[in-house]
Length: 167
Ligand SMILES: [Zn+2]
Image (cartoon, rainbow, N blue to C red; front, side, top):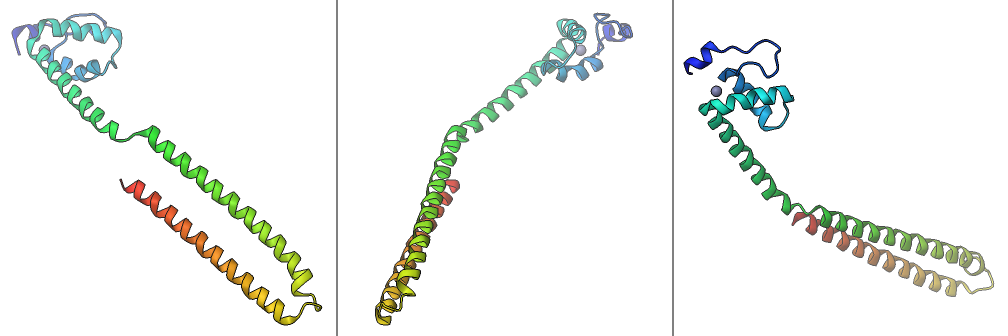
C-alpha cells in the first residue's frame, strides 16, 4: 500500500526479521487473533501492526467479529441447562428402575402363588368344579385389571416425558 511495503521484504526463515508485508500480515492475522502462531510469527506480526494502520484496523475488525460471535454463542448456551437435563434423565431412570423392580417382584409373587394354587387348588379334585371356575374367573379378572392399570400408568409416564422433551 505504501512505499515502505515495497522496499522491505521478509528475510527467508529469519524469525524477528524485517517487518512483514501487508499481504503476509493479513494471512497471519486470523492465526494471531486465535493465538495459534509461533512466538517468532507473533513478534513479526506485532512489529507490523505497530507501524501499519490499515492492518491494525483489520485486526480490530476481526476481534470485534470474534467478540460478537462469542456473545451470540454464550447467549444461546444458558437455555441448554445441562445439569437440569441430567437430573431429569437420572430421575426418569430411577423411576424406570423402580417400575422394573416392582413389576419383576409382582410377577414373581403372582407366578409363585399361581403355581401353588394351580397345584393345590385348581387341579385338586376335592374342590368342587364350580368353586374352581369361580375362583379362576375372579383371579383372571384381577390380573387383567392389574395389567390395565399398569399400562395406563406407563402410558401416562411416557407422555409426561414427551411433554418435558418438547418444552
Ligand atoms: Zn499492513
